[in-house]
Image (cartoon, rainbow, N blue to C red; front, side):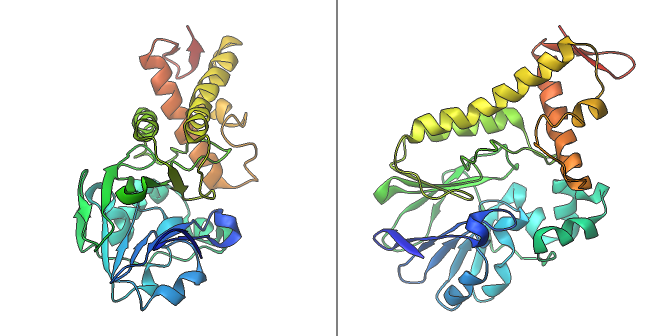
Length: 289
């Protein structure tokens, strides 16, 4: 744990915050408030000091250690609540009901699903009831429907969760993800001009935040351009495109990564067709316009 502002602690996740872990933020004030519970066993030392756990979204790498906080009240956006409250809701939102979930759980030593009942459903503009530090809820959808960020107004510090500035770029591999919403959410974060940005999978950023967010969004454009370049060579099916590693550098023979690759490509193709940059043939192939 590292105090990055007075009474605000950054909790680095195991494996440097890489999946299936994520970084967390802890506000040390009367009661104690934790934002995201995916950092790993390090969170155990906070279990008796935390009255509130606020979740940015339902993904397992952000909620896996909820069970440490049996005495805390949990909050999450209403649209993502099914993903933590029931296994069926998680499966539906993630699309993983279409796959062999045993393989998914076995990856990287994931903790199997444990339900968490939300005590409060968050909405855009809400404030978390927390002593001296005012924390504003920002609905930043795209990664998931209910994905949220949290602005600690005193320090202009934004916990942006999975608007995460990783080199991989934006991730929208669930059926419920949305590219255009993701773009708008990134641009909203840029407009906020935070002085410090804390995200789920990189260390806190204090310099060149706007440039880094711009480069992060540009990865969506790069993927568009690569897809169009391939389609200019001739019609391709979704299955053919998925074998070209446009999204993931490698699939490592994992069914789950190929599934996410297809989902993300499908969203790009739908966007390209909508913008009249590509079309879909009667046979189900895609071609450039």
